[in-house]
Image (cartoon, rainbow, N blue to C red; front, side, top):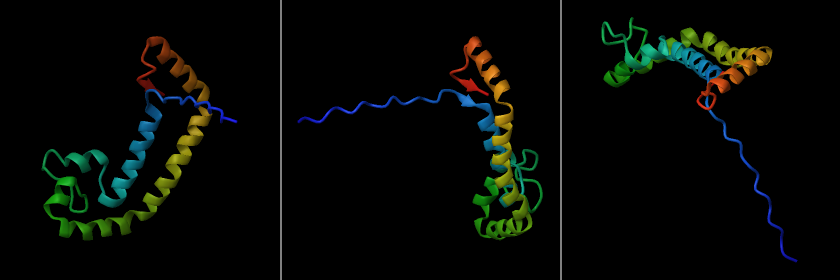
Length: 127
């Protein structure tokens, strides 16, 4: 007897960028850069625009990592020793807070996404 063809499961595409997921990602990246580099993600990537580097000796930017990689390793270890408690706490509490916040705000999120659909941008942006 011939085998039956298995039905293909239709995959739902996730459409749009979720603003809450972007905010959560930024918060987690902020904790990581504060813990390791003692600066925020924007200053880490572009450096301090006034001086060309991150502000302060303990703050590290990408430019400084490529400029003096042998010195930066020791500074990262110092920053990690100083900031590890905040880093671990933030990495654990931020996702929990966003999950709880999304569950509590679900009715408002649904209404906002519905309004975005009526405007016509729901395939691009979600709350």
